[in-house]
Length: 398
Image (cartoon, rainbow, N blue to C red; front, side, top):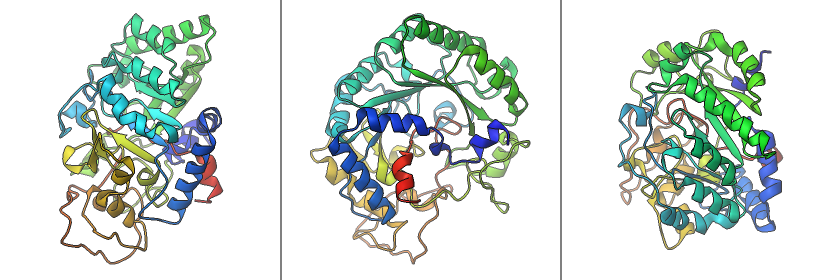
């Protein structure tokens, strides 16, 4: 099997095993380990109201971007949310109540995080609280001082989005990006890290496999060895959850010479070759997703403000984690019904298989209805932000 298909035939979130093992070992405490086990048991039992707390935080330093990627709502101008930069003060307000449970904080989501110059202080704060950090960047407009700051702040893992080995293939998707800038910045960062004999950040080259670059996969493998990246990771392309004409998008972007994990022959999955992911949805148990404005979404796939599950800061984070929106979302994968069932964006999601039961809606809720299908590949074709800890996942035999 080719290297690319060893990646594409897996659920994308399950392809960074060693990283997660390191996080559990390096940042674990008895309290965190007990919480981790509780979360995974409650997910396995399909509990609606949970005692476990999220052990992964996806928090967006900004939802601005210098690129205009055509499968990304930020790039297309369809984000449906006010754009903002997260301040260090508000980062601490959102982060600190969860810190005692967290193994990792994902410092990216819908924007280019390095546009927010306070992100380095946020990373340093998280590391000081014994929480590992990772960040995804396009490295297209990165300055020399940004490279030094990435090395100085304590960042543990960096994902570099580079989808091609030529300007022609790269610029087809990374509109406004400069291919040679990315390659030069990536090479320079690795050189500086090695020169200083630093072990972190671990540097991953993330390559989204699409129709216009699928002929460059072997070239990418050779180039990765030459650059000295720690990992070249191929991931499947996807489309926004509210895409109306999936077939047209798939015809333009989905590759044709590689195979994915599972295909739905009678429909078009929102992420290439990723039909029928194991249920129940892991986002609703493992991770909290926070936008720069403090809005909490159910997963990193969802971006519009109208689909929010809550708003930070709050007096009781546990109450938010078990509010009617979260319980309604989890009930879609459970034989039990939520006490006050709301219709949320999760109702229209087709990433994870639902529990087969009659739909019961009470008159108490006025949740946001899902429109335009359901959740798909987050940020269109961008990096996976929710990374489940696979050792526990295997223990409960998903």
